[in-house]
Image (cartoon, rainbow over all chains, first blue to last red):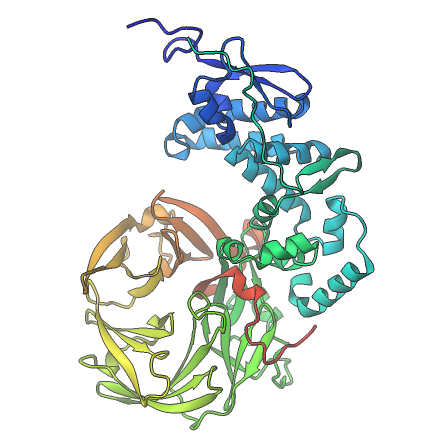
Length: 174
Length: 399
């Protein structure tokens, strides 16, 4: 059997791929980690991103991409195990601790992450950031939710709708 | 050697709303993203989110999203704890929901109901039954069906007679369709193998005297505590036999005789046996104190049979359960393989596939010092969408 070329091996050193952010920073990362992205997975399976090539990601800047990859590297081993079944309680607790700290970040970084997780289709990360936003807005009034998410002030029409809603759904505002 | 592919660029689909205006920290989201966030909110916040923005309203109106919202836990309980009893009014059953954070069961204040208060401030009404988020209450001869969360209620016209021995509320928001009709069944007289009934249908807005013939099941054997409702039918188990009676109220609303069928169960019923539905299939759940067994009814070319789907040691579900505490089956999850069990003083969600506890609810919160010792006797998992829709629109009380 011929020896695998250019780090494409199934044994020995893990295969690496290169991702290029919108501001042209190159990130070299294990294929298994990058493959948490459904968007990238097929390309990587197809042999893309290896060697001197890189996969350009024109919608993700380097700050966001490094954050995304931090998540992927941490979660890749568990994902390779097929998720929860084989994981010990300790492993799961450690991932949970990591996740909690991971989203404890500035709002603008969080928002960039939401878009990146969505575009790269990283299921676990999408769910994690959606949960974080949900935690930020739960219990808040519609007006506070708008402010939290940075929406512009409501038009008089929108304000009237909010007032009417509050009357109709009184139970939801306690 | 693979060829270089310099043109290989991952292009994202760019919906018109995608994009982050970073300067102002503004987040504008695609419908998908809005949906993902909404699915992780408690039901009150989901309701509030309807008027955050037009796109949010549209997302919440979407049927697909509504079906994915997690069901809400609702329970009927006896306020045995001194602090709860003092806070509430009498020792009759009360109603609580588990929609809050941190595994908290929250009592629903029923003072919005149109009942006279007695001197002690107690509502002169008793909870007769609860079914999928709705309550059936009775004060003197008057029946009221109420939603304790949204505070909508409907007063029923007086029933033909005043001697109901058992009153059952039959309501199933998962299958009743947009109209969300319900039935109230008063059992007014028993025969050897049948009963006289008075049935109120919300669609007709009136009571009708009807009759039920239980086939080879004796009325004396029926276990009133085992009533189960699914899709317009009421199931009641017969003690000591391997039978249940299925009374189909929705079929032939105008017939005097309620369509009854006898359902054969996989084993004879003792006091603990219950039927329930999950994934649209009838299940039978029973425990002998050590093992909790969950059977599913299969339908092979018109012949139904039972298959034992899960058998779990109760000790594994509730640690130290054999230390004298009761463990009682309350409900099945409507879709996934999970059971809800009662063990003093908490309600536990147990995943039958992963074999682990996946949730726990208590009165007074997770802090052991604050746990209130109230006894949960009935649990339903109510579709969230039910609270966002217009059930009981006849009358609404605004706070």
